[in-house]
Each structure stands twice: as C-alpha cells, then as structure tokens.
Image 1 (tube, one colour):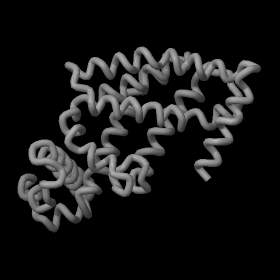
Image 2 (cartoon, one colour):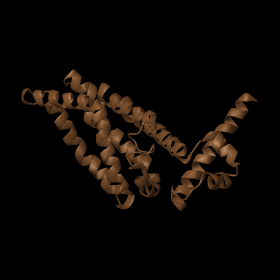
Image 3 (cartoon, helix red, strand yellow):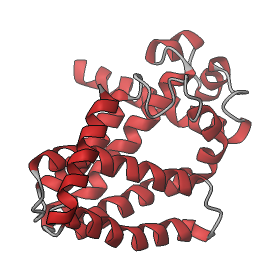
Length: 222
C-alpha cells in the first residue's frame, strides 16, 4: 500500500508540473496562478501547494526534469567516446535535443529567468542543484576524455564548458529557424574551436595565459 501511495503521489506531482507547463505556454507565466493550475489538473489548491510552494518551485521541477532527460541522453556518447571534441559535441547536441520540445515555452518564459534577482535565474541559489548537475556532466566530459592539459585548468574547465553551453541555450531561445537548425549548426561549428583552444592551453606560449585565466576565475568566484 505504501508503494502504491508513493506511485500515486508521483503521478499527481507530474500531472501538476505538466499542467503548469501547458498553462505557462498558453497563458504566459505571469498570468498563470496556482489556483488555475490546480483547477486544470483536477486537484485542490491545497494539494497543489502541498507539492509545490510556488510557481517558482514548479519551474525548478521543470529544470530538474529537463536536466534528468539531458543526463540520460548523454549516456550513449559518454559511455563510448574518449575524444574530447566528440564527447563535448554529443553532450551539447543532447542538450538541444532535450530542449527543442519546450522551445515555444522558453521564449515566453525567458524574460523572467533572465531577471538577476529571480529564483528562476540559472545562476540563483534556488537553481543550484540543477546547475551543479549540469556542471557535473561537463566534468564527466573532461574526466573521461583523452585531454592532456594543466591540472588546475582541468579542474576549472567543466564550469567554463557549462558557461559555454549557457551561451548555446541563450542563442536557442532566440532561434526562429525550423527545428532550431541554426542552434545545431552553432554547436557543430563552435565545438572544434573550443577543442583547439583547450588543446592549445598546454603549449608553452599559452600556459601563462591559461594560469592567468584560472586565477581570474577563482578570484571572481571567491
């Protein structure tokens, strides 16, 4: 009975999330209330608040689910490839693949996520778990690759790759090409450049620049 209750609880939770995302797309994030979400989902307002204390928590659940989808979509390339460029390309392509179904929603939602003080901002404390999970993927990209680079730069590279991926996401939000074709092209064309720049970091003439970059990252983070 406990297991059945847990399954039913998860089904209710997922129903609320799916209903909220649909209403956000149809009515806009700001115009959608928790009461409206509960009514559309066929649950009481109190029950909706039992699972999610606010609309922001619903978006965090969306972040988490999207991140889980991305992790699963990355497994094929991360379990088989050792070349850094191939691993990075596979992970970024999987990122776009998992986001495409939400493209229309993302365009309407972005202005709220971009607000610096918003808990929906990917750099906020509330988005911390999803952000850490995302950085962990890029750490796996680096750790499982054939890269031979300075160990201090290697330690900082996953976060830099995540920031690069956020640039891809920002472009995707504004990409109006069919099937987000231009975003896929951006990934295709920039990964070789990133690979070359990372590989160059171990060359004698670039080592000092790399160390300075690591110093800047750590100083800004502190």
